[in-house]
Image (cartoon, rainbow, N blue to C red; front, side, top):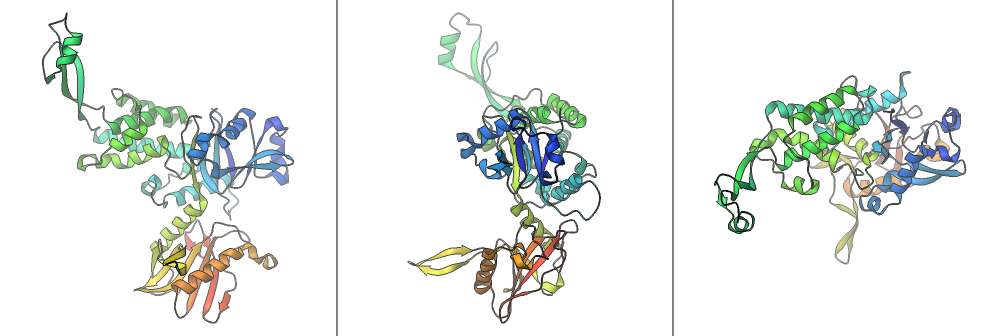
Length: 436
């Protein structure tokens, strides 16, 4: 199978049918362009405008565009994996500053995997530390290997069985005789009994879902190791049928005391089958999308790192608060507040807010004063509102952006008014710390 195509955020996907070729990528103006086979490109276009795509919220990560006066699709600020109906895999990596001279693709993938492991409400949150070889593997292979490792652990601990009601024609009377079926089916076979009884089987919702995921990843996997393990595990689940109602089976799953060891593998099963990423799907087009917005990944990663290591400069004894809320820009309009204000992070000591902080996934330029460093004016207004509503006395605010080659040191402070200051600070993604 062919190697997945790799592209960065905001890159362009173009078609061979429009006259593009691999030589396009050698052009200095086209460093983030991927030339797709026409079948794959048309598959994405069909997905883009399908009713099922709109229902599944697939559209946000792609948008129609024009590249060199020809139709194209532009990737937005989402990262992860996309597979087209024809089986073409596209890997979207973040734009990340690489201070080293090593492999750019592996560096970005390694940084992304590190950040994904801090993503709230996702299977990545409980994933083990990245293997040293993960960065060399396509992202989908990393996802698949994580799922298979957990499925293998489950098998070693034992697959749970359950009592299942079965109706059948039997030579022996056990359980309950179904009179109407007995009359209808056995009128000339009085030696048989049409019965309903309970059998202890591995055919239960959780096992059906895992079996279905194993069948799926066996087709998706490209590494020999993953293919082999998927086949071995499918053999263990040989007596378990595939799920014919994935959503219904997930609703039937109950994680009771004896099912705790199923929890993690079922989270990955759900990701692969139902697509619980914000833009993940597996619809009628036989596509697979496991994509996450970088804004959210960056916010959760910064929060995770600051929870572990809060800089003393933000206040001795300060602790981090996330999911901040409770304030509104308009306190009262017809007896209701309007325009809720929800900063990403807050440093507090006791009940007192010391700092209000917001993360922004954007590459700003510390050398471009004439263009306001690339900082959005609306972000400056937003932080001003946060400061007025959440802080008292000496008001200190912080905008946190990813460190890049043009932004390695904090900018000079911005003073809104007396005792009301904003600091714009880089965040080192690989070290996981503020440069402050």
